[in-house]
Amino acid sequence: SESGCLSIVVLGASGDLAKKKTFPALFHLFQQGFLQSGEVHIFGYARSDISDDGLRERIRGYLKGASDEVISEFLQLIKYVSGSYNSSEGFELLNKTIAEHENSKSNKPGSSRRLFYLALPPSVYPSVCKMIRSYCMNPSSNDGWTRVIVEKPFGKDLDSAEELSAQLGELFNEQQLYRIDHYLGKELVQNLLVLRFANRLFLPLWNRDNIANVQIVFREDFGTEGRGGYFDQYGIIRDIIQNHLLQVFCLVAMEKPVSLKPEHIRDEKVKVLQSVTPINHDEVVLGQYDGYKDDSTVPDDSNTPTFASLVLRVHNERWEGVPFILKAGKALNNRKAEIRVQFKDAPGDIFKCKKQGRNEFVIRLQPSEAMYMKLTVKKPGLEMATEQSELDLSYGLRYQDVKIPEAYERLILDTIRGDQQHFVRRDELRAAWEIFTPLLHDIDAGKLKALPYKPGTRGPSEADELSKRMGYVQTHGYVWIPPT
Ligand code: BG6
Image 1 (cartoon, protein in one colour):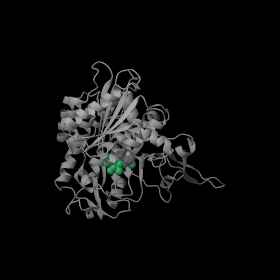
Image 2 (cartoon, helix red, strand yellow):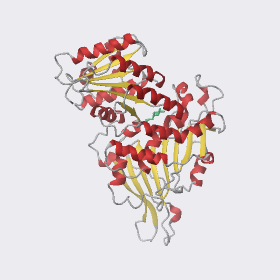
Image 3 (cartoon, rainbow, N blue to C red):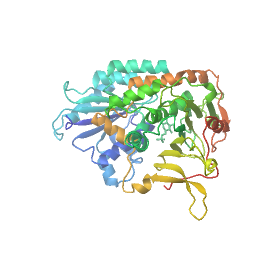
């Protein structure tokens, strides 16, 4: 039943992720009427010995765009329970606190729903999940539900990920586990399926006959400040490429699903991942920005990449021969995430316009969501000259009155609704690790070196050379920046 009491438990409530993402996302859901008092209770759980108000004040600073009154009303929904991540007392107390609220008279009758959000380091997932399983499950056995949201990193390679999956799989079934990848909650990522499969225009073009190369790019203009210790254990491939960019890749490259059922969509994602051939080391460029090792938590001899550009190749009828360049970097010249689909040259170039650039379809995920298509057009005027122009759908202009939801907000709502479409299935995770594990092991063994680059640049120039080698044609003397 959807009408019963909903308890949302944020474990790791005083951590960074909870403060910056989880609670603000819950707040936005509250503001839009999805979490109503009398129906929903929010519990923060962590080790710190603080009061309810102590937690509320820590969160308050991260809640924006509403009056103090509305913020206070939301904060009143939050209770704090303190305990360790492996002690039964803590979780018994948590269960008791949840049950008190579920049984309080102000609740609408109905079966209880319990959502656990693990905003915690993965090392404690197994013990926390065990505790939840032992002490905190929704008490009504045949109604309501218990669901658990876990964040990446899910392991460090294929074996560790499989081990973690097996441990969690003994405690919860796949319908109870929500492996979050917040890129799947971004508006333009969610748009990919519609774009590809609802538009006749794209259907015949989306293949090796017409597409020369695809780039999926993530850039950040800040480094790993404050989280060097975490980052150094993982590196940019595990932090961004193996999950966020690979999920985007799936949606760009997969075949049409049988329907929009979550299992049908995820079946196709698994298939395309399984069609990726082993990564060729000659098609990998790694970088590390100067100053990365100044962080006291990063070892002086770290070879951890903060930048990587690598090529995926899909061995199937649609994509054979088309390089997918996945590129991600920290401390670069700007912050941007985009998909760049470059088409082949038009044959028989009677206009001699080839040098101006190719058709490109660009989907900018952030900042300022936009899609634009680069076209060659006649330069307006009396001369018969051509130039590059664009068909532009900038969301800020076209959808001025729409507030685009935050990724986490959407994904938490999906979890409450029981929709797993935008979550990573166990076999999908496995297939993702299969692609990257050999390369990661070689990097860890020092067989590939991260090249130095200056912060605030495009990263190592070898990466631009790699794109060029993959057939990417840079448009010369012309950079289109859509209006924001
Ligand atoms: C996280 C990574 O998953 O995604 C961070 O751990 C990164 O390193 C962040 O900064 C980027 O998310 P977004 O939504 O700002 O692109």
